[in-house]
Length: 437
Image 1 (tube, helix red, strand yellow):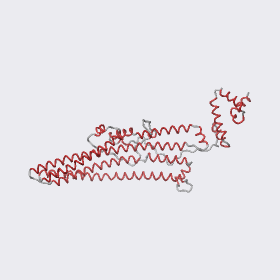
Image 2 (cartoon, helix red, strand yellow; image 1 turned 45 degrees about the vertical axis):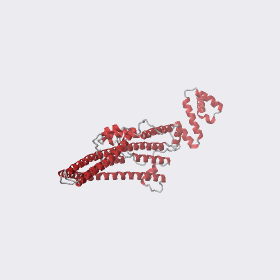
Image 3 (cartoon, one colour; image 1 turned 135 degrees about the vertical axis):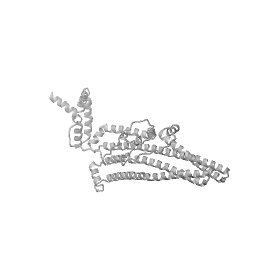
Image 4 (cartoon, one colour; image 1 turned 60 degrees about the horizontal axis):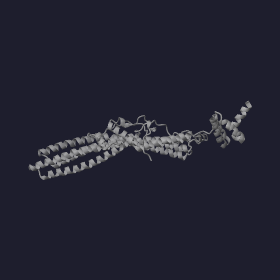
């Protein structure tokens, strides 16, 4: 019986090599009738792969598929790491703590309304499913055994896509925030010019009263009407720009113009964003670039040992050209990003002195307008002095509005430059409804 069992076992395992066709057919039918068919059929498929191999490779495949331990199998390519990992922020949504609830609401709306962002998430999930299916295929396991494992290359490429999605999210948030700042800028300038138009019209009325009283010539009234006409044209142009900026913000957020007007209100405050100290640079676009380079190097069969050696001596003759180029590209991108952040922070630091000086100028211009208006009403001043004083005051106030808006916009850009606007959860974004090509 033992010899029979041994013989049967030899036939089941070695049939592809030594058993005649008739014997194989009888034993296969017997095998099909057994409860162990699935496992034995898997062995047969594995043996087909082994039969197509030869020499040491066949031995390695047979041993690996049978689950035995061996040191003969070729090493697989491990994932490459160009630089130490950068921790993704747990909550990089800077607008949530910006102190402007309307801005936070508009950005969330903008993110939800971005069809391109939703399509990116959908494509990312599709690629993950494709990669998972590839890793489950038997051919993928065989590639790993012969030293052609493509999983590290696919994993790095998939991470590049995930970081690209995170960067696109940060870009969208920045776009909405900048559009919001522009709307607030034009809204406040429109208010200033409308108020100034009312003053100029009042000046024209006063000039006409004084002309009728014989105190001044018709020149004052003519100047007053001319000034009112010019400012009226400025108000109309500003209103058109404000309407266009508001329409752009509506398109970004999916809000109707009526709802947006209601939400904006009439106060027209320009947001003031706090600037924190220098933060760790965790830009998703740089991480995406790093992952793409890691994928490319894995494809070129660069080893981690070669990479580590190149990091120490990038110009060494033994460094592959592809590796040297990749490191230079990454270093250049990182250097550019840091220079951009430094430049923006330097510009922001200069705002304090400029705003203080402009505030003094605006206060002096306001006092000059008060004095000139009182003098003209009392008959001690001329109309030209009043005109110049009011024009200077308007210019100073508009300059202050522009500076506040520039500072807010620059702070928004700084958040993006330093890598805010995305979080770790964005590397696995939820699936959303989208119409994609």
